[in-house]
Length: 317
Image (cartoon, rainbow, N blue to C red; front, side, top):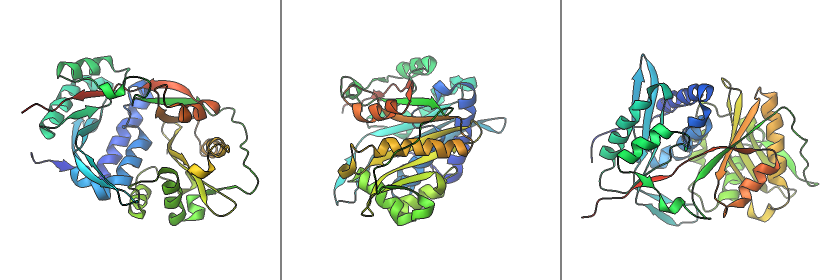
């Protein structure tokens, strides 16, 4: 295994800055896991447990970060129900500023050298025609698992916040924020929606420490019996006046009651009051995954761009 530097909180802040600069010029080229909020959420929730297998490399020009790669190496994931999942492949999150597009070849070479001997996956934007051609030149092909009705590709959805309808909750339900309800409720709300999960109090503490996290933009829905029935975190990019929802989840016992819809609308009103003019949210895009897409379309979102899952299989021995 080659030596490498691990991804740090300071690195993530620089990477978020690059995301903001790309959004300002070519928002369609922001990769799936390279958005302002996605970076904070993914690093915050997993750095304590998985960060030892997160090598990174940064490329600078004139003092500005212009490209980065973050490899997530094979690991064992322990979830709150006691189950264990072994991740046997490597995954790369990355971003290259469009003015320095040629650096993608260095990113690819670094990834191949950092994760040799294992299957490697990556999710470039489908709008990045130059980048896709370079990945293909290095032997990456469309991931078969992404094809078909139950494919694994992700789409980014967007809507403006000029005219947002008022939310409506069932009697007895109420909106809370993480600031109001406290850390224990915030963690429980996530676990209720996503169990089994590797999310812990330590994960949430990591999320709270990231740039862009605001407890007043972390929305919970509390049921009449005190159950945390739904939750979402909103990530406000002040530079571009956009807000991203990540994650969005509802307790299985409280689904199909309009809670997700009401929570998203309530969140959009909060985001608009905080200065946002547009909102984004991602979901699986294949036809066999209609639930989240239907929810988002129902509150005014429409697809803006999508990713193009690629894979390079491990060499046979």
